[in-house]
Image (cartoon, rainbow, N blue to C red; front, side, top):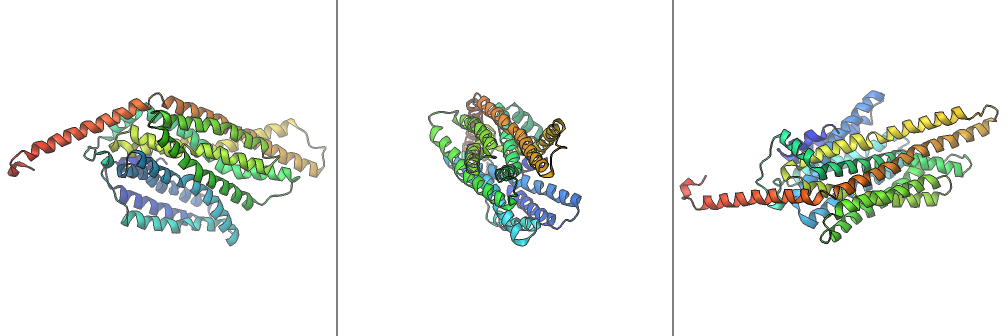
Length: 416
């Protein structure tokens, strides 16, 4: 995701359609190539290259939507776009697990999506319209500024900075739960069944279905609430995001507590925890688009993507794993099982592994509270920053209209 700001800079100045076409093609090619790698380091390289392709459309697509639509219609289109993240993640578990099981190899799970990727390449290249920056807001004649000026302006934008910090917390939790959630639930189910092994694919399938449905309902619910309440309360976007995280936190806590006791209750709390987490996706994108000038939006998207992934879901699975290993070592060093028989030793070790991962995942609850705080701070600045953008757009539009009027009054041979 380090390439996201680069794609953002290019997206503010060159053809976004061509950049997205190249990015999605690279994503499809590297995903397919990775499935044929037998060497770990080559596999790691191609999986890393996947992120370059992903950075292109994740950075640029929201800005195209913002230039095609405005107001509530833009919010609806953004909800439809970000609706794909939790739904796609859930479908990934379902399609990946079922394909791997059907073909008896995990590699085939990576060979399904490139087919869809090539279809997306053709659609983007031949169908997508690339509007002028700010066209939907009547500011299609804004001139792009230098990269340095863009960075300085974005860094001073408090709504952008605090909402990005909040969204980084969302990404942290989403990454940790998507990576460790199925494993944790599987360990809980095995404890419920007296240590009997539970099929990994079935747990992934169930987790994927729950995640997908929570996304199907959560993303549009957040957008709908924002659209309905925004005319009455101008700071509602930030407050919905903050409330979503603060409500999701105790629900995640309940997931971690009940996993070893009841699978039904566990999936129940997973659904609602992810539902409230998903409220934020499209709203955060909407906030960025109306507090940042049209000619700087791709760059801002790039930096938001970089920070939210680098400090969020890129590192959270690793951090949870490290914490879990540390808790496991601590537990086993403080307890003696040498005198127990093999069966008892195995059961004790399994329970310790489960509790270690549980303690590590408690971290996500605190991160959600921190994210909620960042969004509530965003609410203090969001109205002011939105007015600054509207004022700049209206000033530019006024200058352009006056210039056009003056030109129309000149003799035809003097109009360029």
